[in-house]
Amino acid sequence: MNGVDVQEAITWAHREEWARVVATLTRRFRDLDIAEEAAAEAFATAVERWPADGVPPNPGAWLTTTANRKAIDRIRRENKRDDKQKEAQLLADDDPPGPLGAIDDERLRLIFTCCHPSLAMETRVALTLRMVGGLTVPEIARAFLVQEATKGQRITRAKAKIKAAGIPYRVPSAEDLPARVSGVLAVLFLVFNEGYLATGPGTDPVRHDLTAEAIRLTRLVRALLPEDGEVAGLLALMLLTEARRAARVSASGELVTLDEQDRGAWDVALIADGHQLVRERLAAGVAPGRYQILAAINAVHTSARDVRDTDWSQVVALYDQLVRLDPSPIIALNRAIAVAEIDGPEVALAAVDRLESKLAAYHAYHATRADLLRRLGRSRDSRAAYDKAIELAGNTAEIAYLARRRDQLG
Amino acid sequence: MQYLVSVIDDKTNSATSDEMAAIHAFNDRLKAEGHWVFAGGLASPSSATVIDNRGAEAMFTDGPFLESKEYLAGFWVMEAADLDVALKLAAEGSRACNRKVEVRPFL
Image (cartoon, rainbow over all chains, first blue to last red):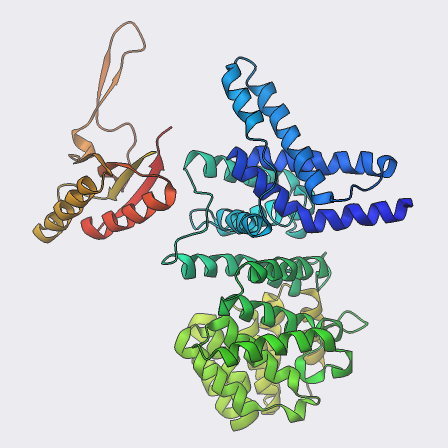
């Protein structure tokens, strides 16, 4: 095996095995800190040894065994004064990894612990990316444009809280499961959105590393909770959104809106996957949650080969369903955009204007108004709305798009 | 594990009779299910005295060590297997006493 193949094997093992190793060690040592450090040491040892010794036949088992040894070494170092009995117990517990189902269950425990509702949202995101995703602290800090030390402290404090406050390491009971799953999905959706609509002047408009990581983790949760409709819905929503990534930013770094995108540049494989998930949820015959409805809306858009073929009445009907579930002004804003295609910009503008008190600080509110005012020929009002939208927008590609649209006004 | 569930309020001894009845019912449940350790309401912070006996002589100072609009008006000490159990109990406690509560683990 040559150097490139070994490097690939290590990358693959990291992607496939990191969460398993951390989860298995956390179950055994009841300590996220020990599990994380031992897992990191095991992968560092693999980088050192595999090129010379060759890739072991079962990389996952090799990594788990190595990480177990590292953890025991650390505990011994820290408990020099501890009695021999405890040490004997550690050795006796050196059991082989359990059946696959049991390990999968442990990764699920790890996810629920990292996304515990008693942790701040930002902490849940950082902890999930570190413990489940295997991203390093500098990678996470870069992804969210914060100082490495700040992110590191956040993760350290979170691990300390989990230990001190007795946050359990288990899958929640059936009665708590829906609420806790929706907490996990919120974390994954936030990671995806940060990648999809990256903010900040120095960043790429679309952070593929973050969208890819969010999809990978959502696929994992889907494999672990295959019966959950909202997990399937979120995965479908991410796939159908990611499918349009290449068409979404022009060569000059400008946002391309859905109606102007080159639909030939959409990723047909991702769209097929997303549509399959949406069909599966429709066939389930269970009332859909918000992610499933959002996925269905995206399925309607991605089913149209040309923007003129879009089934807008279907889109509005889905938004009506969504409004009943989530009466947030942002949903109402998106519904109004679809309404404009059926009832015209004047009706839509009236609906948008009613949202002013709630959305005055949201750039998309002003961008939507600007577009509707433009279509109504009210150039001066449109220009003012574009100015406001540009002032509030954080995404570089979106700012470029809004500025061009404003400058094209007569 | 044991958890301190602090009741946060800007006044003390202000529970209505309905709230008191709900608190008693909740306390009975804590006892029946083995979560009960201790609970009590506290008089207002203005009745507090701060004592510092680290020096040669004990110093007594009138008033609380920290002035704030909201303060500890009462508390439970609960036995719970983990934070999920404690949070669930604390949520019920908050509902029963109709006040905000904070959960903090003992060392």
